[in-house]
Amino acid sequence: MLTSTRNPLVKQLRSLGESAKNRKEQGLFLVEGTHALTEAIATAYPLSIVCCTEKWMTTNPDLYQQIEASVDEIERIEIVSEEVLQAIATTKNPDGAIAAAFLPSREVAPINSLGLALETIQDPGNIGAMIRSAVAVGIDGMLVSSDSVDLTNPKIIRATAGQWFRCPMQTATHIADDIRNLQAKGVKAIATLANAKQTYWDYDFTQPTLILLGNEGNGLSQELIELADEAVAIPQSDRVESLNVAICASLLLYEAKRQREMGRK
Image (cartoon, rainbow, N blue to C red):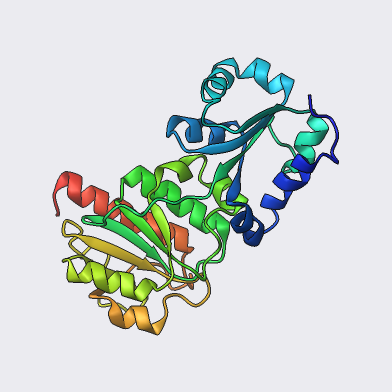
């Protein structure tokens, strides 16, 4: 059992939670908690290191057996003390398991039907919530501008409740160019604007659609507003200045799901 918090492995894993730069240099990111680890195993996401306590092994025997069965793919499995786990974790009360996974190398699935394009989103909780909604609705993929919060930020992964591993997504260095490429293939880009003439209930989501969502404080850039094929508004009380971007995403995504499953009405 690894009991020293000064062990090089502790420093290595702790650094993954500290910055995107460290994650990029090591090619790894943290997967914290039983729920996230379960989803990583279920989706066969490549893991490099798994650390867990003896207590966790006892309470999660089936999952630990799955980890042991993947020993050929996982480079290192360590039983650690509670103190070591706490030293690695980015949360105050880790539940007994932490892993290091390889940075995603997958390309986003082709967006032929429904997708999200996120521009300059800074709150990891917002991106995490949008990922959960995106997986629940079953979108093709998600594009996230490179000036948004890093997609492997531990707070994002926790906020997705494990659904991070089920959402095809990628960082877009030139998101406007990616949007134009999708438009050239027949996908309509729609922006959400307070002064839009039509509501999101009026828009026909049965057609191939890419939903554009912007920064929490400033919204979409003028470039993406002008690039959009159409704009929609979300009706709200005059007493409310704006809605949270993750709420906006959920409303639009579920309206798309409703129209596609029930027929547009």
